[in-house]
Length: 136
Image (cartoon, rainbow, N blue to C red; front, side, top):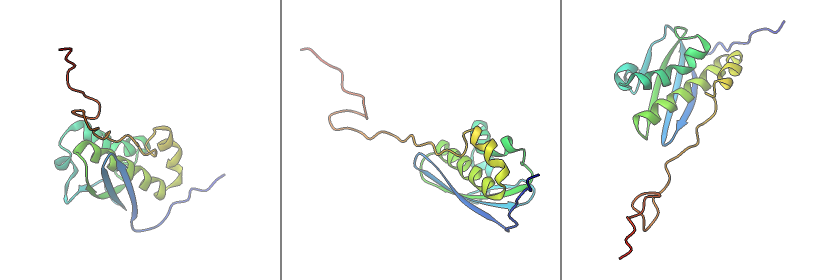
């Protein structure tokens, strides 16, 4: 029978990215406390949908109250930051215990979402929006 390998490190550091956001995640053994940029996660990510996105790795692995998390996130908007936190936490959980890798991989949480905003092109109003065509 395979033995469960768990790193006995005081903290695990990982990075998550989404759009223009970068989240540096520190994972500690603890009681499920989240701090994002010096504030409580519920206070920082004010919408319930964003809280669900950020907590998704813990919902998949059922480890919500095993770890404390401190996150420093910069760049992008609040939705991109929630996605970056999710990606960083998933990577940290895999570093903490390899047994979670299969579950997180199947849920698609270890894959970096590479979709970025398309750049504006000259002669257009936005990336693809053109001015209205006038025949005369």
